[in-house]
Image (cartoon, rainbow, N blue to C red):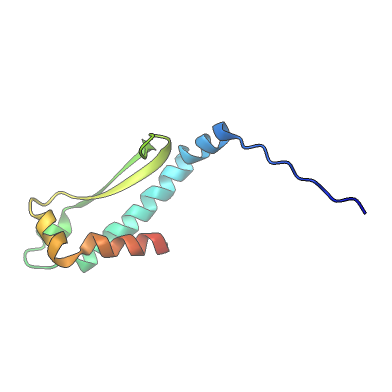
Length: 100
């Protein structure tokens, strides 16, 4: 009996099209919006301003090499760094996003 041989030839251009395509950008957006909802739910409620200051930005040319879709979860509150240092809201949300 003959042994089947499989030869894999990577298609880097095809992978790049997938990674920068509109479907991948949409997937990244949905994941980041799920994270935004989780962050808003976890946010401290001293004033509600921090929870209301989350936004999602999506680009199809993200990553260190600008070769993949990317979504960023951003908080624009002036004191967001202090809230994160104290409550780790975004740090906890990363786990939620990665779990899907």
